[in-house]
Amino acid sequence: MFCPTCGKNNQLELKFCASCGTNLEAVSMALSGREEDFFTKIDTGMDQFIARYTEHVFKTAPSDASDRKVAKSWRLLGQAVLTSIVDMLLFMLMWNVLPLRFLLLLVSTPFRLLSQRSEQENQEERPSIEDYKAPELAEPVPRLWLNQSVPSVTESTTLNLAAAKKKAAPTTDKLK
Image (cartoon, rainbow, N blue to C red; front, side, top):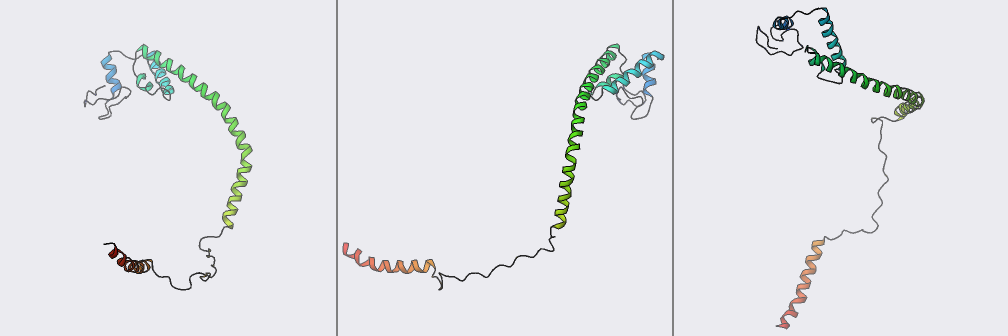
């Protein structure tokens, strides 16, 4: 509904304009040309009450409640019946689940409390990080196999390569 004072488009379920505060309910009654009697007010109130009840299953129910058509009232009633059925099914499910959870808690609580108590005692017995001292290591074993220094791989290779070239040089001359 558009506010006649400021022109803002407001939702149908609002009684007052969100921008200027004009009473939109009075404006809608003036535009419709009818005055609400006692039964119309009760009918509207019941539709809004049912719409609030069905809101957790049907999200659009409150927006339909302000519409004063008979078809909308029947739709709200049907949504309320479906919501009641869903609620009864959920109630029966919870009626079975809650006692089971109670029994599980009743049986498992002593064991869980003992487990928590032993964990707390273990936490108290464990040394803290500040009290930790690293273990002393034993003396290293002396080298049994390598008493002398080991020549590098490259020194040995270059010496052997030079010797191999000297031996190979006279034989290649003979082939020519």
